Amino acid sequence: MPMCCYRLMIAVLLAVALAGHDEVDRLVQSQELARLITVGDDGIPHIGLYPFVYDGKTIDLHLVRSDEQITDLKARPRCALEVDEVLGVIPSYWVSREYAGAATAYHRTVVFECEARLVEDPRAVAAQQERLLARYQPEGGYRPLDPESPLYRGALAQLAAVTLEITRWRAKFKLGQNRPVEARRQVIAELRKRGRPNDGRAADALLWTIDAQ
Image 1 (cartoon, rainbow, N blue to C red):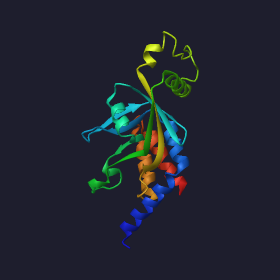
Image 2 (cartoon, one colour):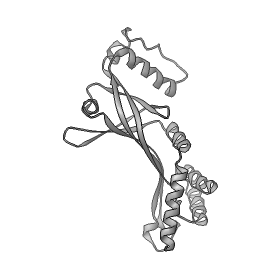
Image 3 (cartoon, one colour):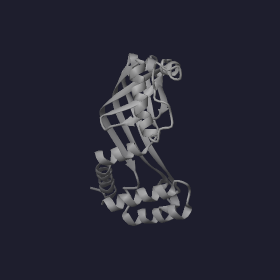
Image 4 (spheres, one colour):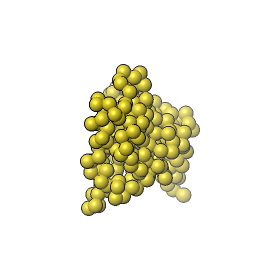
């Protein structure tokens, strides 16, 4: 087997190993927004960015009842949800003095294939909103969500609670695993020296691939 193919195969196997279920859970729980992808009657995908609650088997989010994605899900409950962590891009000359193709981007991405269940009952919507608030605003600071209260009645009547049952997932952790360890260490050093807002996180992610080996 040619060396380039062997390295690619090793990189793929390592990516699969690194993106195990525990690491997927950690990534998803660390992110605040996810992209819901649905398909319209005309076959055109619709994409929305939403806060969510994830428990490993299901994902909770809410939509406005008049949203086009609600129409999509009522007709076609199958959908996808993407969670990603964009870490940054690097120039080719950090890796090769001549080969432009060495320029690359680093990210961790998980795509969930799901079946959606929609509930429009205001009490169910309120209960889901409490779960979302427990994640994003655990300190409280709001009046309890009572669907009969004039404070909330109008808003809750416009929402639908969406629960996504995860049927399959796939992950891609693109962190330079195809590069030799010393090449990754060089990139880590360059990232720390450059110092863009996400460069420290990118450097830590590349170091994690080395430690995992």
